[in-house]
Image (cartoon, rainbow, N blue to C red):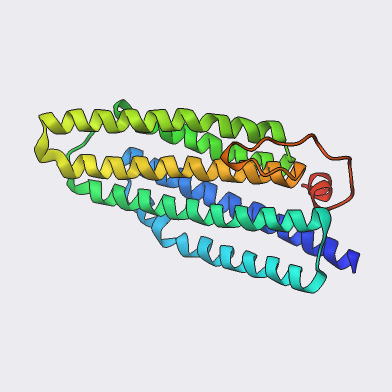
Amino acid sequence: MSVHLNRQIEKLKKSILALGAMVEEAFNKAIRALESRDMALAEYVIQHDRDIDQKEVEFEEDCLATLALYQPVAHDLRFIIAVLQINRDLERVGDMAVNIAEQTIALKREPMIDIEEMGLLDMAHKAQRMLQQSLDALVDLNVAQAEKVCQLDDEVDQINREIYAKAERRLRAEPTHFPLYFRILVAAKQIERVADHAVNIAEDVIYLVKGAIVRHGGAAPSPEPSQPGAAKRLNERIA
């Protein structure tokens, strides 16, 4: 049965990385659409969200079937638990991309604004980097890189606070532009949440490799002795 389980683990590995690539592309396109007010690109992000949703459901069903059929233990069980969590976070990032695209379409009716000067692009680029690095950490099972992702979250939160402060000051001077700044703040919140989900993915990578639950400031234990299992195979077989 171990041969069949190994094959199933390999299938799950490929599936979660494929979903990660889809979600990263959706988020990047949503940011490009927001930056250039590209309505066609925003519509594309919205229309293709169903593909991400379908992949998320299929992946969860595959994980549950693996648990039921093979009753994995130790590293294999930990792998499935981790990627189930990552699967949900990726689906939520896809939702955030859709929300950003929707704000882009709504902004079509509003005056132009320099979102770079507002700090929105800086925050978006940091969130993009966090998402990319969290997925790279998953591919490489790189705990150090996952920890760097977690550390970047404070920077995104700070920029988000600054954007809210700028919007508040401008609204006092331009109260008739409330719809404009409302859309900007909604987009900023979605970007900030993407960064949060990137942190969740990074924390799940740490759990996968070390068996450490580091949410809420928990400390990671020392690395475990090398053992065969899904985590090791993921690193060995990655294309």
